[in-house]
Length: 148
Image (cartoon, rainbow, N blue to C red; front, side):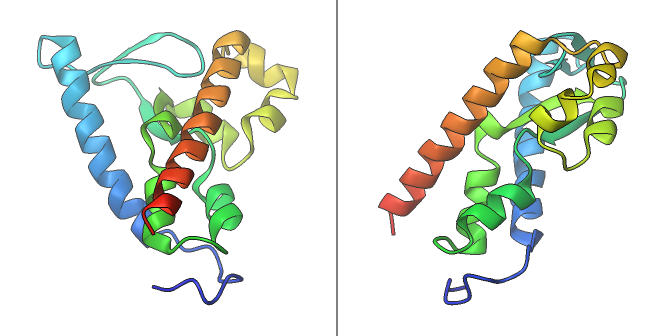
């Protein structure tokens, strides 16, 4: 797809295709970390250990829609998928947190202090996670742009 339509609507087919591959790679790495054929993760927002069988989700720290809308005037859908799914922007969190947060920016979701207390959010960990995601997204964007 070319980017002649910089006002194109949000489209996530390419994002989801790559996200599926990234999740499979992350799962294989988590199985190795677990060492007992049970995946081992660290929740990106609480710091808690998550094991295979726990109710967790793979999470885009910065939403795919937000990134798509930011870069749609400069990148193709496939290129945006690479930015969205950069390693710094994909992590694991409890399903209850992911569902509660939805598409909200983490900063907006955490502005409701009940979300922090109800979900045992580690605020300093989240801040580091967000900074890391933003840096990774910017680096991936610059890399994709430099290869055009």
